[in-house]
Image (cartoon, rainbow over all chains, first blue to last red):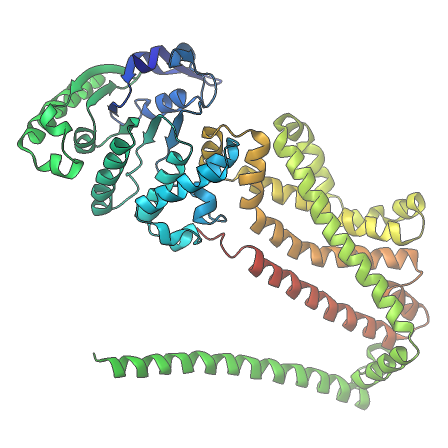
Length: 259
Length: 269
């Protein structure tokens, strides 16, 4: 059964002079353990869609269901990771990663120990009592991942989490995030404008057209690529053919926009 | 380059920093000494009116005399207490008011023009009303110290609250946090640097409020000593009070700076 279901989601923003439709008729279901990427040109409402799934924004029309229950506020089983780490500079790394537990009233010793184990797993055990300003960008984003995972969500929403990093760090982090999520059996939705990243990391890629954002095409990533780590997937011969395919579809979207 | 040369260069660099620091201190000291010597000499030679401008030695003698008979002590304590209470309460209440405005955008829109008017108005002009309303005592002087700093603190801190990056709030909300938790975990700690820096401004403002308050109430305190000295034409007393105020204001300012360094060392991003 699907973990997440979106039923004809639509989002319209109102201003004094106009009403802008950002999303229209988005219907989608995500199974447990699946990794989905949402790819599209900037301004296609990708991040808006993620905010709606996270329960931070109520859609103008349609509904979001998790385990067949409608989502109207941030759901405890959904974790959200932003473009930048947004670690709190005045909190130590330990206080940062246990923030979610504190807010969700789950800061029992057991949960805190689990969060610290996760920090160790990700190779940042030694930063526990440091402050974010003492860490590099890649390390900070890894801490942000631990913070998101600490509340033990079933599903992670990733809003271009690698876009603020340099290329090398980004590639390394893709592998780390991908393997960590697989290991813990998490479902994930990644929003990105990077075709390569979408192919390398996910099982399914969904292309959104812009103005308003709609589902334009859904790609299933070949099994051979799915099994590989993102970095290895990028070297595989199937990668470039899939890349080519998606590239052409994106071109179509752009042409449609210009007409 | 090999290591020893690097080390030598480093030592040279450190020495040049030290040297500059020493030069600055030296010039500062020279300025201090020449100012007071020039003052003393001009007063002695009659280049300036000694009745009006007094002289450092006369001020020092008066200072020792006042300490000797214990009369200075009470005035200093009064003024110091009023000022400290004034700027701490002014900052706290201003921050509280800013929190209220942040909490209710409706209230903030309603109060906006009133705050602008209140901020533009010279608060010391309210002094006489305060004294009649509260009475010529400690209370009305502290009220003056608060009044002079509260509105500007509210405006500055509220602006800082509004400028906190929304994404931090998004983090809190994605964990199911409510508005109160947003304030406690993000808004307030993110604005600590602003609150401390308004504390610094308020140290100065509070001195103005308290001294004017003491002018009007005229019972005790350094403000009272200034007014009294002026009335009996004892400008040595006036200048001595002024120097004490300058010294104490500096000490307070340094104190707040120390607090600043302690409290917000991790706020840089």
